[in-house]
Length: 147
Ligand code: RTP
Ligand code: MG
Image (tube, rainbow, N blue to C red; front, side, top):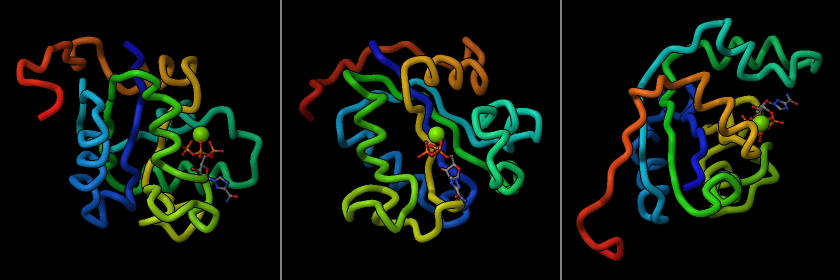
């Protein structure tokens, strides 16, 4: 089953949005396999956002993501990578549609509430950067998936 890496950014944690965001993905029907509140080191931030290292906002991005705790998560489900990106909305909250996470909760591009992997390759890379194998829980829900 496909897995993705999602992370409530420091602004989302500060604004008490962890529960709300977890609820959105639970209600959608995705399956939580790992989650932790953690502070990202500079080294991890630079690695995670390595694709942007030549961009003018790289320093600001690394400073922001290391500025306070994030809530790192691994979610599983059919097409979870692209569906989670759709649920997140456009990178810049000013362009994100109402109903999406960034459209509903974000204002600035640098504080856009949530990160999500953008491809299967990114998902695999980011999950292994943030989680050890023993932090991922493989389990079956024993109640009906419709309740
Ligand atoms: P993310 O990686 O955080 O999920 O966001 P994304 O895929 O939608 O956007 P990406 O292009 O990967 O950019 C990574 C993060 O960099 C910040 N950003 N700032 N100041 C700027 O012009 C600018 N552009 C991008 C955003 O916080 C974005 O989420
Ligand atoms: Mg990205």
